[in-house]
Image 1 (tube, rainbow, N blue to C red):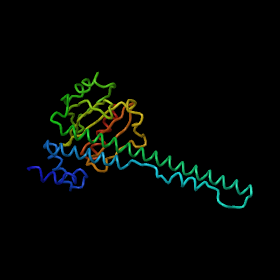
Image 2 (cartoon, one colour):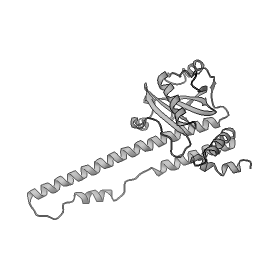
Image 3 (cartoon, rainbow, N blue to C red):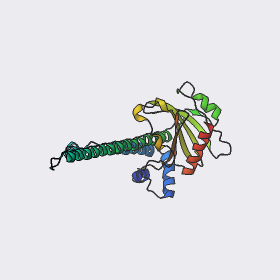
Image 4 (spheres, rainbow, N blue to C red):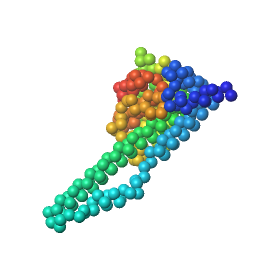
Length: 260
């Protein structure tokens, strides 16, 4: 019963619609309350499932009929030149329609994939912070954390030097994105926890290749109170996510880019 007042605002919190001060208070409560953390994770997963289902698109049954009608010859003078113009116009219309459908479909798939990946990464971030054991190797020393991953994941990566940066390393653990093993590092900056995920890009499923055109910052999921930045470098795919400011997310990303 103690958490009923918190849980009543949980959906508003996950939608990022609480006032800034109340959002920070809610963040602190969720990180320290196993019950609210579990409820938050369950609702995030439900929202992700609803969003994914809502994006499924089935071509309209009338599509074929509209195409056939657009290319069907209309009554006109039976002149050979007129038929040639009609045929050319029909071909142009069909090609234009197919091009629009292909471009629109590809763009839709890219955006759907981006949202899918962001939801997965956000779930991993929330679940880890809600866990009683968020890291498997606990150390602030990058020379201790990096070797721990050797033999556990099929690639190597570099960790940045944090001296005078304001960031501190808390530790790391193994993780998976669509059954692909990777590294999950946790950093702290001004009492905010930031997750850094590293995966081998070529090991991701071909159907889940992340579009290069969607790299960059300011790519936060619309319904989650997180900032996120992602990029590809040296055959690895990096994700930096957390409730810290966009400037802090960008600063940590730049440290990783320089270290790599």
